[in-house]
Length: 485
Image (tube, rainbow, N blue to C red; front, side, top):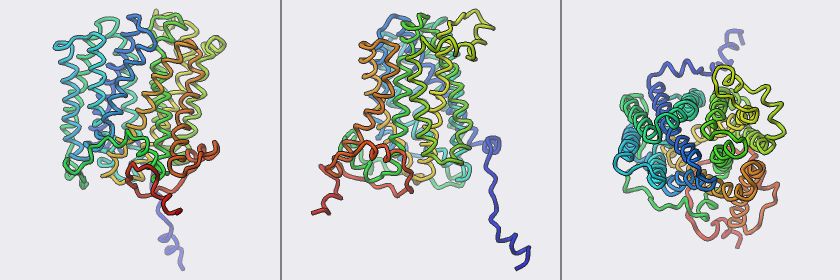
């Protein structure tokens, strides 16, 4: 065998795609721009309403109740939204959804008003529409990118979305709350949603991109809210263990993030003794954490795999959140190295050491959250067929929002007993307990036996080869048990 033959037999090493290379594709730029604008609009509305309520003197439970309205809508319509995203071409369904969100934001201040009930209505309806947008944007990544570009494209879109979120929550929302009020927040959010619709309109069809987009007929879809059934989820988790365990890790991460976010404005007002609008400075480093996490996640995922990245990122989140309960001890040393000192240097904000330290602690928490959720999305994009991804992302949203709803309300209630500081110590414990409770029921329902703690943890951390997605019925017990008789 000659040296030339040996060279020909050697496998060709593919160069990992870079952000610049995937950005050279116009469809990727369009999706990224739409993600940027829509995330900015969503965060302006969400954080603007939260800070507005805190500044108006609302209690922690009232703010938690307002924030939970979005997750109630997601819980009710999440799976149906994912199936609806699969029923029509992604370009078409996203265009209509963004236009509807823009119209909602524009019309509410003029037709309804901006009272507490009106704001709850806006949060609820916008969240319901977003149940179509979120799985549609996630699954469209597989259409505009090649398999080798998938992780990089997904990370890029999330990076751009994180930048939009950061600008919306840390720059635009506080300025609008202080200078203009809640009406301006809704109008600006509506403009950004309409710009997102315009960008998606310019996206070529899947056929023009050389892809075959499989859709389902609306009348063939199962519109029953099976994902709300605890039995259905237990059966589905056991039938699809590899993907289900990753979805559960993502749900724990998302609910911990959302629960903590709802606590921050009152924490700033009552513990740090600052103006609640100064909570936006804490969100600045949160946005940096999002950006850094999304930037380096593709390399870490390629090196360590999606599951390791997701699990260790969740651990990092839990530790960071618990540190907020020790702010009275940590504020001095952490304030010295906090990048937020630049705010005091170049503005007249005069942030306290406690605010500086809190912002620094928020960085690894959001860094870990971004890494975890990015790993889960890449895992789904890589292992689930494209025509099923919308439904899986919809189920992911339902499961996440069940946790979000329970966590936000539970933490709001517990905070009324423990106070707004020490609730951060209990937050990771509450989230972990809910996850273990779901696994306890899943194992008991499927096998008739309660799992050991090590077995439940192993379910989450052990990597298994991906399998074909199996649908299940919400029967009384898993059908596998019938074979035991």
